[in-house]
Length: 303
Image (cartoon, rainbow, N blue to C red; front, side, top):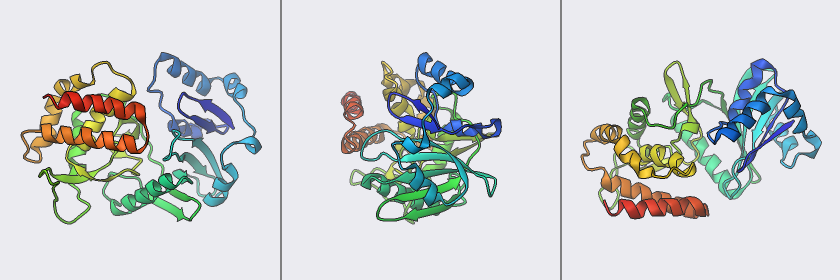
């Protein structure tokens, strides 16, 4: 195995032939020039990969258990995930018996296991909707949760900017409800199904069709949550100086989204989004991000 280390996590890739290099799709170099250069060198230089070689017998994650749980003769690459209570391992693989690529997740931490159970539920609920990959297999035990889906061939957006296509996808998703009728909050804000991590790294586009992956945090939230996530989450993660400038840059798309639901004043929904993000990031003990959303909420409160 070859280890690729980033500031937040690590990735492990087997020796890959040209037709299996889709497994490098576990990582997207959204960082600076140095990160992109290192990633290019890792993918294209056998010398760099050899320097980062790791014996599978000395891996610090449950490699053997994952192979046993999967049960197939499979080639696998691994993303260790961001450290924390929700950390889980993401996998891109290829089954040598069925000749099919696949995506999988393996969770052992209690919070991560609950998220994976939720993703299984959502994937079953949205089966055939065109939004999600097909759920191929899953295993739920007291010690771990493992889920396996089809591999979606596609490319992630090159830009983090909001587009008409992504806005329309957000509208269609928000038209789904977990219950049979529309519900509202105590403040009379409309609720709908929300992906929860509606960000460029969870989009895959192929021949003009966009599919979403990573549904573990999907649940009912106020309208606009996903749209505002796409606008602000990457901006705050990558430390943009003025994230609120996107409210003007993307105003046309924001209006397009809310007009689809007959709403002319989006500000209450924006405030609800910021409040929810502060609460969620606090729950995950992600102090850097909840403070950024807290600052954002304070500014929005003055609008």
